[in-house]
Image (spheres, helix red, strand yellow):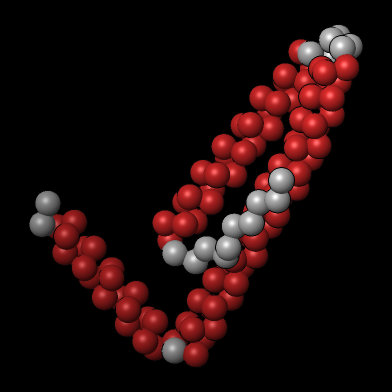
Length: 111
């Protein structure tokens, strides 16, 4: 069972990816608990099911790790891009930060 999720770049897709990773981790934990609980069942069907579940768990762990690495790489790339933009336009960046600060201050004062 191969799962392919295309690179997601929209802000809502980041939240969806994080939620999917959390759900996948929960499934892995629950499956590990199930494997431990059925360790004493030695029937052939149970052994085959345990082997398939173990294989699926390894794939799920690998997918989860890949998605986490992809998220970290995306965050690092965004930070580098932001740093480059600020360094190439320092005065504009200061002006934008100042404007946002004035806006927040005005909104805060009007409360």
